[in-house]
Every structure is written in C-alpha cells, then in structure tokens.
Length: 458
Image (cartoon, rainbow, N blue to C red; front, side, top):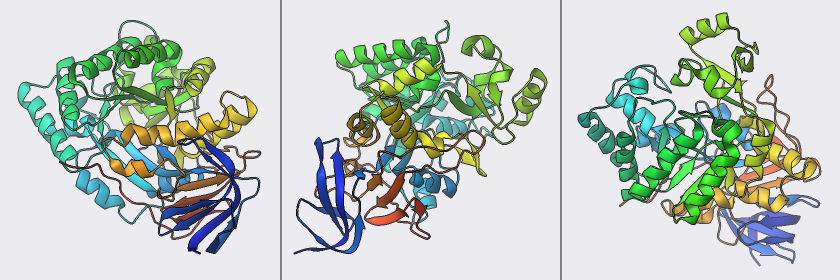
C-alpha cells in the first residue's frame, strides 16, 4: 500500500474536467495526485474533510503581480496559479527570475505589447505608458522592432501575447495585426484589453471587439478578451453574442470576467482623455481613490490626473456584470492589483464571491459550472501552447496536486473597497504542488512551492 505524503479523507471531490462529483479519499505523493479512492489510504499527513468540497486549484489568467502580497492574498482566495497575461512583460527571463522561489502559488506571464511598445519608444512609464507609447503612431521600423521583441519573448517561453489597446491608442490597426501574426506563428493566444468601452459609438466596445476578432480571423491567432464586464459595461450582452458568432464561424475566441461592478485603472492613462464621461456614462462622482477612499470632483480629478495613481471606476451595471458571470463563455479572472494593502477587492475575493454569492445565494450558476470557469476552462485556454496545463485544472491521478478545499455552506468573500485584502471565510485548505500553503484558512508561514510555468519552445 502506498504511503502518501498527504491524504484528504471524506471530501466531496468535484472535477469539472471529468464530471466526477463523489465522496472520495485523495492521496498526494511527490507533488502529484497519486490516488482517488473509495477505500482508506495511508499518508504521513491526514486532512479530514467531511462536508467539504475538494476541487482543482483556481487558475487566474489575469493578475498584475507587483508585490508578493498579491500572491498571498490570492492564495487565501483559492488561487494556485496566477498569470500576468494582459500587460505582460518585455523580459520573460527577468520576470520568471524575480519570482523564482518567492511565491506560494504558481506564476507565469505573456510577452506584452504594452511593455514592448514602451521599450521601443523609450516611454518613461513604469507599468502603463505615460509618454509616446500611449499615443504615438509607430513607424515601420518601430513595428518591426516590436515584432522582434515579441518573437524573442515567445521563443523564451512566454505563455501568450498581451495587449492593452485602450492604453496604446496610438497603435494603428495595422500594427496590431502585425503583432497578432507573430502570436499565430507560435500558437500563442492574444489576451486583449479592448480599445473601447461601453455601447456608445464611436470607439465603443462593439467596435473594439470587431477589431480584434478581425485580427484573429486575418492571422489565425487565438483571441482571449479580458474583463468583459468592465470593458463591455452596458454592451456585455452584445459582446457575448459577437463572441458566440465568431466561434460558430470557426474562430478561437474566449473571454473572462470578474464579479464586480467597478473596475480600476491608472488615472493618468489614455482612458481618461477628453470625452471619457460621455463614452463611459459616468462622471467624477463615480471615481474613487483606493488609497484614501475619497470620491473625486472636477478639481481633484484634475489634480490627480497630473500626479497619477490608481482610481476605481464604478461603471458596470449590475445586470451586465451578472450576465457576464452567468455566460457559458466566460472564465473567472481577477485583474488583481494591490499596492501597500490598497486596491480593488477583486484581488482577495473574486473566486469566493462567485461561490458564495452567485452560486449559493443568487443561484446564477450551479457549483460545477462555476468551478469549471475557475479551473479547466483557463487550463484549456493555455494547454496547446503550454502543455504544463494538461496537468492543471483537474483532479485526476497524475495531475499536479494543486487543490482547494472549501465549505460550500459558508464560503464567502469579505474583501471590500475599504478593506480590499480582507480574506474570505469558508475556504479552508489550499495545496500547491503537493505542499499546503493555506491550512484552516491561514497562510502557512514560509511555504513557497509556487513554480514558474513556461510554454514549450521551438
């Protein structure tokens, strides 16, 4: 009889990949799931989990890891793999080296059009453009330089190619097609923040989605549209219909959302250039500084626009957000950002908010469907380029032991705009690569088993 490293007894095992939904005992050995059994199995550490759900760890396709605190906050919400695929990086080796042996959860990145454009144009911005990369039209030499940097990143194992077209409004449609072409060469999905928001023409989300669906059709690159809720706003139903049509026509288009009415971005970015109030259907009083909690006025908007910083935007109608959460097209992803303990509650609460509010309280989703949005759907988005994901998002013998155990009757987010890192309740155990990182809803001090996940290279 195998003596496992860890055994979890009497849990209700839910595996969206196979449809398994039964009471089982699960054994973990050497970082892998070694046994799924009706019978008693032996182990060095025993976790008793009657009344608990055991499921794959959550895979977040959209995080902005600026600080190790984000990894810890996400672990408490059940995230076992967190990925910077929208903004990405212009230096894959430096990104992975920075977080090597420094994270409780797995991590990875795209090579990003934003940071690549910033590098080529010598933009002084740190995270998002603040100079030419945001608003300048690129010449042919610059476009070629961007293509070369994206190719280098993909050669070094970048998981995808990231785009933030609302932050690089100077980028021509032709430039974006050229970047999609490189992604297509490497079977890399393009993770795109659309160029427009909302439903009002011109420059709305419908037009913006047309742009990238066209680029996908022209080049053959897979497309993933990020945070459909906060980009689509009132147009979410129309965007979902367009994605359905694209897939029915043979394209490979996926999307994601987070379960909040507000987004968060940099106030100095191009998103707040003249006309933002009309385009987004909001004004100063729907903007909040996450570090102070103050709502803005025309005067403070002007001041903060000059000094820069994060701003929370209350811009998505409740019915649009719920439509995004409920759609079979959407995965759950967080767009996590926390700096010095301040930011958006989506970092600490996205997954438990779906489980507590949208599954148990509102009935928007059944539990297996919700778990699929957090596990197997994001794994399948990446597994063609990164075969490591064939072993993630699953509770199956031989899969990586990335596991979450929670109480379906009590699991609930607690993070708020005032306290965005308050951990959830009812999410009890998180195991990453066979190592407990959360036990009894508390972080395991010093547990850093997270690994960098790279794509296959040619």
